[in-house]
Length: 475
Image (cartoon, rainbow, N blue to C red):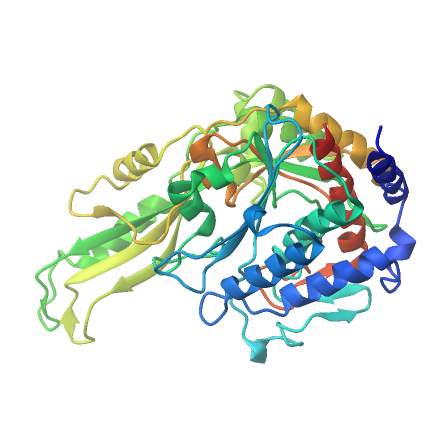
């Protein structure tokens, strides 16, 4: 065993100790000071779609990696030709065992828009206050992006040599919701798949809720997620003067179609991940819904349990595909009959189902050939395949988690939203949203105002993720 590996193991043992008390104090550990500097620079670099610059942020991190000892050959700064501000960074650090499948660390560095006048604090200044870090991207997803980059820097500075190849992809465009935004992970998969190729990937999406006494309530591992598809309902008409109403009114016909869509309930469609979540999360509850969750997870055909669980607005999306109207437009003048009326329908498709099946369900419930169902121009993510639970991944997550967070259960989760993992599924890379960075959804401000993450979660999560990735890099 080399001195480098002994040093890494010793460091891992120290980092595995509980750090709740230390996390509330200033980052006096030398490694934390360096990390805080990287994290601050990243949060304070505006990477919104409107005026931000992901290319600048990626270049800054690339410079830090280069200063740590990475060569230009190991760093790829890419910029899609049509989006010069949407660049990113891919690191390819060759391992000593070429036969081992690579580990890909994936994080996005773009953020949701943030208006200064709406925030209590400047969203692009990292503010430390009452044990929390505030700023746009402080949690989603610059915390994990900074941790991944920091981990590689620490490895390189310590002299660590990975056994398996380690890749880091920091991409732009994950938060994009319209046709003007280019998704970096999707662009790499389509244009530079060799940069992304890996045996598995670690990504955002895990984490967990804050427990009543602090720390994580669970260690969530996001293995599965639904896929968004946007459809447009369109009704057209020859119109006319509003003084001569006609029964065939485009707005009325669209309204009738939307009323039908509001009644559409897709059948229960579970998979091994959602079943495991229902059983394990349900067992932690002590109410009728918890008992029904356990029954449904074990017997997906239990209609009574499905009805009870599905009545919970937070749990219903876990059970099935959902579609909901989100935008509405109609008419061209207050004194004219509408010539055109449209509505946007946002669907979240359960793993194992397809966009065509979802569209067919909409057509069936609307049952009106005058209502056209069109594909939206909004950027769409691929539909993911039914996932599988891999003990080779899940066991180390739990084992290392037990050292950092004793007694906190590890629970596989399925997201009702979507991350860049959907793009990796196109080239067969199983992707896991790892735990470590927990938060309180009610106050986190993710995609909203005053986004924040606790210093406790950031620093303890960083230590956990360092140990977890170190394990896989060395095995």
